[in-house]
Amino acid sequence: MNKSELIEQLSAKTGVSLHQSEEIVTLVITKMRDTMAAGGRIEIRGFGSFVVKQYEAYQGRNPKTGETISVPPKKLPFFKVGKELKERIDALADSGSQGSSSRV
Image (tube, rainbow, N blue to C red):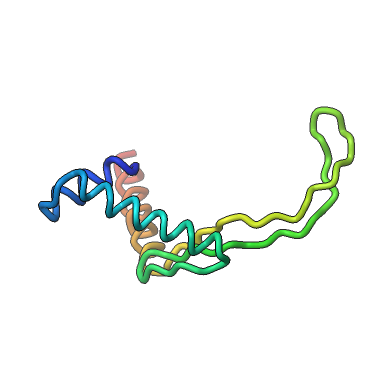
């Protein structure tokens, strides 16, 4: 699902206009981005959490030339899946693999 599909689903399920749905989705994404940019954590129960992980500087290697380069410290967004979502996906994977093995 992409952003425009999410906007369409929100509009269809709630009855609000596409324009209002777009504003709502954009507001949620903007607030999530701003929270993470400020070093905050976002937790959505049953889905997962978004955090910012900080990585230290290290010596890397340019794969093209083999030259050693300094990689500066950086912060990157990280998603940790929630228990409920993980269990649901595992259950779907289990039922899918059982279905395909029974056809053999």
